[in-house]
Amino acid sequence: MRLSPLTLGAVALVLIVPLLLPASSFYLSLGNYVAFGALVALGLYLLTGMAGMTSFGQAAFMGLAAYTTALLTSERGFSPWLTLPIGVLVAMAGAVVLGGITARLKGHYLPLSTIAWCMALYIVLGSWTELTGGHTGLRNIPPVSVFGLELSDSRSFFYLSWFFALAGAWTAWNLTNSRIGRAMRASKGDAIAAASFGVNPGALKLRVFVLSAVYAGVAGWLYAHYQQFINPSPFSLEASIKYLIAAVAGGVGSIPGVFLGAGLVTGLEEALKDILPVIFGRTGNYEIIAYGLILVLILMFAPKGLWPFIERYLPQPRPITPKGEGLPTRMAAGQPGEVLLEVSGLTKRFGGLVAVSDMSFQLRRGEILGLIGPNGAGKSTCFNLITSVLVPSEGEVRFKGQTITGKPPYAVHKLGLARTFQHPHLFPEMTVLENAALGTYTRTTAGILTAMLGFARGEEQASLVEAYRALERVGLAHLAHQKADGLTVGQLRLLEIARALASNPEVLLLDEPAAGLRAGEKRQFAALIRKLVNEGVTVLLVDHDMELVMGLVDRLVVMHYGEKLAEGTPKEMQNNKKVIEAYLGEAVA
Ligand SMILES: Nc1ncnc2c1ncn2[C@@H]1O[C@H](COP(=O)(O)OP(=O)(O)OP(=O)(O)O)[C@@H](O)[C@H]1O
Image (cartoon, rainbow, N blue to C red; front, top):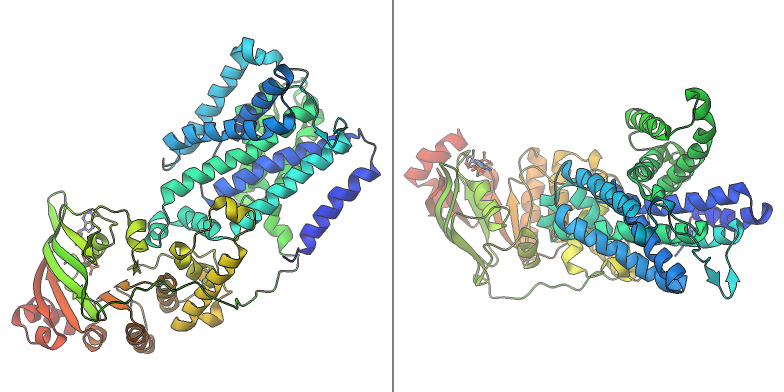
């Protein structure tokens, strides 16, 4: 792995600066608090920046680990090195309980529940005097020793806290650049799309929530052994808000950003302690007002935080075209013409409206089947029933003889069905290559821990190679390193196909793939689909462009008012009176 100049600079600073300052320097003490804050903020980077969840409860997870280590080391004589995993496990257990109940909540409910949780823990810590010492707190927490050396001054502890902070950054970076990191970003942007290529967004969100508590737990453990004394204040709601502001101020979407934010907020906290009493004429807890104001200003003028302003002056790494082995292919061979997908008696009611009524048809291996019909006929609903985005009111769908009705969309995708959307569901902040690589999610296996420790690099490289090949197949390889937000409609549609192809599907379900394409692009698209079918992919296509559909498909199923009107070859349908009356007359006109 090549380290960037920024990383090398950060490591050099951490190693050299403490040697230039006295062992008990105020600045080294401040440096320790920056490291604690950075660790909590790294958890928020993963939680908020990557997975799109907001938490006001991170200080509570910190508190759980801090009190666990304090109680076990000062009263039971445990080694701090033993209480590190125990404290982190307690923080994780808290996150599992809280996240299990709340991580799936949408909108403001998750942040609100974390506020309640943080306040509740603060009250418990303050009032359970026999266990926690109440607001007087717990003393006599032993320092951490490394090879018999007690880390009891700010300088020696600085090395320990920054070891953890940099290790935290490294693991978060590894995770970001892995299949899990991509899945997190995708779930944040669009859970339906994420599920369509195999991610279980609910389970992933819970895991990230617990992971963010691990970072906070390590910070809590460090805090307790640095201070050698704890009380509930550093684990209050106010502290949680401070960490969130640190992450947002620096830039919650980037790792250097959260370090910058932790540094700024820690420094500001010290400065405000001197400035605010002068302004208000008395001492008090006025920092929270200043934090609120800072947050509002940042959200107004730099919603992505301050790091992007610095980043633009730094040299950007040159994108590398992925080379090497791809992923093992998983396409199962079968007999051409065998039934792959069987839709029987499928019905979907939305209240009183029957959008799909008793639809039955088969998709056979190696064919291109078109599903056509007037606007509102029920094609997209049918499509969403097949891919399990919607649950049918009646009927079922079988894939290779196995009932898939009732399975979640991510499980359906795993079986070998990949889809595109009527309105492309892509991730504009990701590069074209990253978007395509999302398709490889179910072909890869690295879990969170494997990815964090950097053990999944080989698989990740193979994923990128596979994604690049998929881009080559659709003719987008030249745009691989560009952000997806600059693409035309036609390119977005091709990118969705590339993402689907990267999953090595047996069946490709295309929902209005030609909408918005220019004539030339439509011809290229038709050639691409034919090529894919020759390579062994089976296609179900919904589209309104009759010239394209009639020239491309082997068979057609025509829908009208939710029902199947007719089925047959394009020629048969073009001569079918009912079809001409209901649709083709209008579509051709
Ligand atoms: N989630 C929903 N809730 C209520 N009604 C819905 C919902 N989704 C679709 N419908 C209705 O079901 C009917 C079928 O819609 P659907 O989008 O499946 O048709 P379509 O054939 O794909 O149309 P188009 O060609 O315009 O995309 C329409 O009357 C639509 O308004």
